[in-house]
Amino acid sequence: MIVVFGSINLDLITRVERIPGPGETTLGVDYATSPGGKGANQALAARRAGAKVAMVGAVGKDSFAAEALALLKADDVDLSATAEVAAPTGAAFIAVDPNGENAIVVASGANRFAKAAQLEQLAMGPGDILVLQRETPPAEVEAAALHAKAKGARVILNLAPAGAPSDRLLRALDALIANEHEALTLGEAAKLETRQPEEVAAHLDRALGLATIVTLGAAGAVGYSNGVRFASAAPAVKAVDTTGAGDTFVGAFAAALDRGLAFDDAIKRGVAAGSLACAKPGAQPSMPYAAEIEALAR
Image (cartoon, rainbow, N blue to C red; front, side, top):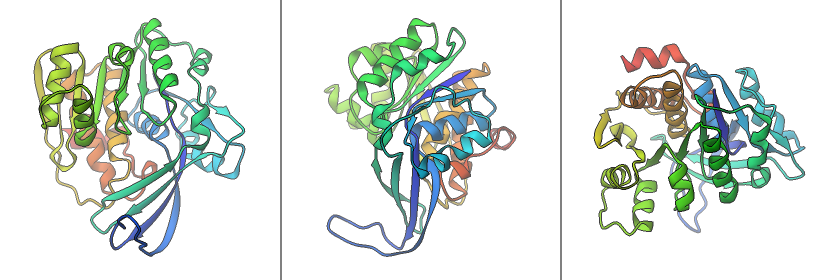
C-alpha cells in the first residue's frame, strides 16, 4: 500500500498569452476549476498507476472540499484518515501560457492543519510506502516520516516546494525526488560548490546513501542509487499543460516500487506517466492509467 501525507487543493486555472511578471496584469479569457494539491495529485497518480492508495490530509467545511476530493473518491483512494477542519480548503491559482508552461500561487488553507498523528488511523508496516511533499507543515512532514520509518515502511520525499529538509528528515528517507531548481536549492543549503542538479543527486547518494532522482522536464529524469547512475529519456509528446506532470512522476514511480519493480524501471514508469500528463490540460484530469503508462514505458 502507498500512503500519501500531503496537501489537498482546488485548482483555479486560467490560460494567458503570457505569464505576468511582478506588478503586471495579464488577462485570461476564462478559467476552470480542477482538483489539485501535490499530495492529492500524487495519491491519484499512484492509484491510477495501479497501486492501493490512502490519502492523509485536511480539507475545510466549505464547497471547495467536495470538488477537491472528487477524483480521489472516483478512483477509490482511501480517504478515511483525511480530516475536515475549520479552515478553508487549500487553493492554487494557476496561469498557463500557450507553450504549456505555468506559474502557480498556492493558498495553504486547511493544509496547515494536517497532522502526522492522522497516520495512526492506518495500519502501516513493512512493504508499505509513505510519500511526502512540502505543502504541509515541516514539523508534521518530519513526524510522518519518522512514524512510517518506525513501522518499517519506506519513505519517499518530493522536495516541492523547494527548501532544505532537516537532517532528521533526510536520514529517515529511502528516496528523494526533486526537479532541477529544487535540487540546486538543496545543494546550496548543503553548501555544495556544484551548480549541476545531477551532481547534487550523486552527492546525496554517495554521502547519505539516499537514492535521489532529479526530474528534467522534457529531458526525462536521472537518478542515483547505491552509486549507480540511472537515466530515462522522455518520449516526445505535444505539451498542452505541464501542471501536475511532476506529481504524476512521483505517484507512478512510487506505484512501480510498490509492485516490486527495480529503481531504474520505476524511473522509466515515472517519466512515461509524467509525459502523458503533459498531453492533456489540468493536473488530476490529465493523469494516465496503468495500461497507458506501461505501453509508453515499453
